[in-house]
Image (cartoon, rainbow, N blue to C red; front, side):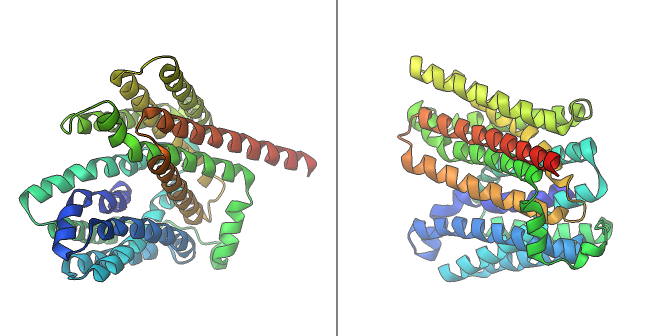
Length: 386
């Protein structure tokens, strides 16, 4: 159920991407005004997470999920029925706000129920959906467009939201633990996360891992198709290789996390990503990199996100049994923000070659390692001083 809930927003983000030209014609506006709906969604989704986290910790998981799904459903129906670009913008923002409020509860519920390695194992299954959904959603959208109007994409999303509402109403119990912190203000909840140095180290590790992944998603088409000359038929195959590797790594993580602990697997994945990035950069500097080398290196690099996101998130939430949704909101919002920044840097400064893309990805993960170690070292010093 939580994996299905987590897939809601990624599907809403990417399923309609192939419909941009058709929507621009339908609304009689430049395609750039349709592209704006994606930025509005990211803003609304981040705000939804930031408000939904404290809301969930205060009022309960079920209340937050149902509120978010109801807003998501209203926004989606507004898109289906809207006849103006302004209506599309407003509905898209409302849809994203509801998606953020509801989805932030998935990881929080895992933290309510599980601890330690068990939490990381459950998180692996959820993060697999979170990462695979945005990569597969454009294929779903294209298939729908071949059969029907673009509005059917959002009709299907509406039906998906209704099914989630009914299923979660019937089968999802309330998992929030009520304590004296129930009446804490949102600021107090966020302060407890932001001032916890070890937790913040894990938050930044996950967020900068997202930055590396979004950098690749942004630059993948120009590198694979523009630089290497891959055909439009071959590109989805090359892109899909990352999805396969993500699924494999998440499966491995779920099996071995009890033996190696989430923290060790997170660190190992980060160091391996840096090594892979440096290898690809070295090949590009010393010789002409070939397509198979690029695809293999990137496939392994992106696949290792399966270790980083699930173990990093589980390690963060371990410190906040009473504020799990707030901590999850901070992880998600920070990840989307840094991911958007990394993608913008690649889009603005890349010359179409893979060198800048790989350097950006490697630097993002390196920053994650450095910040995690510095914050954890500072926490250790504070503990000794105390």
